[in-house]
Length: 273
Image 1 (cartoon, rainbow, N blue to C red):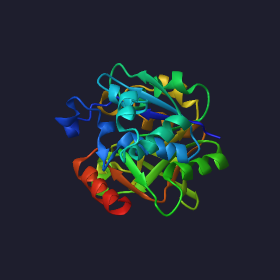
Image 2: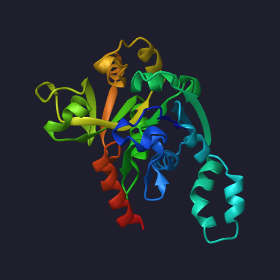
Image 3: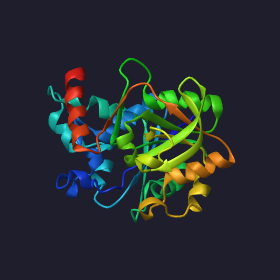
């Protein structure tokens, strides 16, 4: 039902300087695959085949990764190394990739708005590649969310419980649980102080959005840090309609932080190699 997945990938990755000075943070490897490839695989497994990527200056490596490298393939043809490209070859054959640029860094809401030309007027998913999600015992997070969307036909955000001391790092929701793991959102605050947080249910980097979000974003004034926040747009959407929060099954690694990146690397190596 949902065929398009948007990847906001224009950020600077300042928490990983100096390596991200010349290398996109989305291309940082967890073992032998870049973060963004894990995200694309998750979207593909959830039935989405059209990948829309919002990039910026210095992000050319992302486009090159999801393309054929004739010289490299010729060099390793017939060797035992050829099989190492099987996964990425399969992705390239099954998916289409389109790109646009976010000229100025004005927040996640602005990045999503930049993707409107690639998405059009249809529901779509959003993956933030530095939130690496894993659910080895069942459906991946985006597939779980797609099932929620199919049932309710409204925007859905993924949430997890975090320590109250951590809420200032996230968008935080409050709402009524209307079904197992599904909450109807009645409030959403971007990076609240601990004393102002409506709950400890934090939004992570997985969304399914209805296309009216673009018009809402276009009229959303800058919020926290002077940026256009998707949190503010979703709050407006839930006031006029319905937004759901889904407490997903699985584990999320914050690979935008060094500690989360190292944890994911160690655990993925132990589990999958």
